[in-house]
Length: 226
Image (cartoon, rainbow, N blue to C red):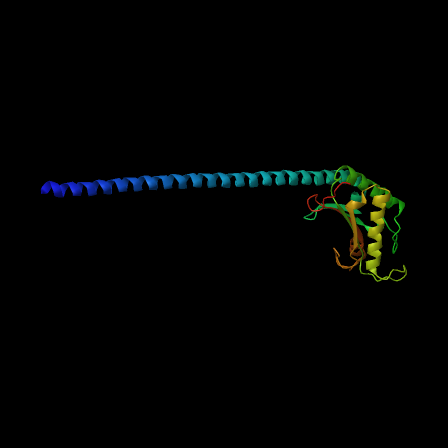
């Protein structure tokens, strides 16, 4: 009688042990599959990270190369425009926009006129040489500015028209005489409304009457070759 009771109990225990073992194996298999899935996910994430790092490195190298081009242009312009800079008729400045080359308008124009003087043409030839040699892929913005003296005798409707005409005159010279590709260039006139000094003295008004040539960073203004 006792044996009859023990045997079924042992069978139940064996069945329970077997089920536990099978369940343990199943859980182990599930864990291994989960680990394998996680490894695949980690690999994918690592690949994405490597791709991002490579892209960032390419961007950094490209940015440094473009900055180097602008720096080289700045150095060469400092040399070629030494006379104008020494006479305080021109200045160079590296800004967030790019390399800004600012000239007092008297270098290029007579009062109220948009026709470029011979001395101004020589200066623009120097600028053209650097634009073509050092930064051939960068776009260039030509900007005209005036003081706040109202137009009286020159026939222009306002200082806006005068500043636009002067920036366009410089642009056309860069294209026609300086052989700068026209696709690289733009021109705009701001009139009297973006002064760099108060219009309260002849010296300050001269500072405001200016033409700026802005060499844009290649990524911000890349000129595609034809």
